Image (cartoon, rainbow, N blue to C red; front, side, top):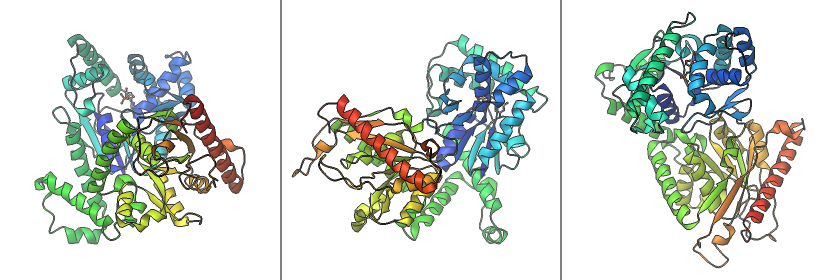
Length: 507
Ligand code: DC
């Protein structure tokens, strides 16, 4: 499904599009950021902004990629993070010129359509509903009064988070300057011959001036539901029609309830197995709430008892393609704390991590119940558990990350023999994704032999450079798997040794 969101600057479309994508488990495409990246590249290369041909050539050569969308969109230009650099007043000015050049627009539209072809997407931008995805199932034109828009931008520039409904004191003259610039941009954008700043055919206009983000998202969710119903096969529609209350009179809470019931039904017949088959964002709401509470509790507890630190957290996302796939994380295994901390840290960045757990845990009904809600995927060790491999592959393709401990069991001392299980490389290859090596030290000491309760300890982790199959220099699939296994584990142990040197005494 494609959701197209459009509207003038400051109407809240980015905030709403991101919140909606997160809620529905869709990927998010910020087309404005692509034009901004082009404008930045042209400026950095010293292109004359009156030379349309040179601007087009420079933009066409731009390598633009998106990181996972968290608080703000992570944008990479030619491999470098430009998330902040594209949001300056200079780029605000340059982008109007760049986005007005038809050759550049044609190139961007092709890239955007390729992005949309990969699956469910919430896309925002000026021509999304009319040119890029004219077949989008839901089209929204988001508007807000000029004053509301200028105020939001001013609050954001002053460091306030409008997505969370924050308001901070801003100088009237700053707000006025933004208002003037916005009026200029609106005029430039809407007087353009190639497209106008107006709703695409079939778009629903929503005025966000007096609405919270959640309220706007809620309204769009109703539109999505209507679109789904409209797309349902005819016989089903006929049967449902007599009972369905009229569109205008149907109150919002009932729709929400129906959606929640639908979620629950999907998981009802095989309560534990269904969790292994669905992406974590599609879990029913009570499970998502359970996870949120557990994550918060675990964060508080672990931060107090095992003050932990992850070095180079940003490496998790380095060079990530914009294909919405998760990555495979491999790590040395020293205690039960390891998966918890990684899952918390990524959850904080709005990502879901699925630890691959040994199937022995499934013997205990409660553990099995809880682990399934935590997103674990059980694997029968020592066998080619193709069912688990496929589940992990599908999870990665749906955007979940997969955490694997190739050592298979907790390693309590350096003398303990280690047998590395290479399944992780196969999973990464099948899901066409990269492997990120991570090491942990300090957690081995928390449950000394003969003790049941963990003792407090400082814990350190370090993230290594992601490893892609392309960089391994081998072509045959089997050789690639072997090389990935070897390189990944070498990096894990090298990272661990670095940590040990940095933190003497920590094992
Ligand atoms: O949404 P934004 O402020 O990041 O957009 C930056 C500029 O790019 C703005 O002037 C509108 C323009 N734009 C465009 O022409 N077509 C799009 N699909 C998206 C943005």
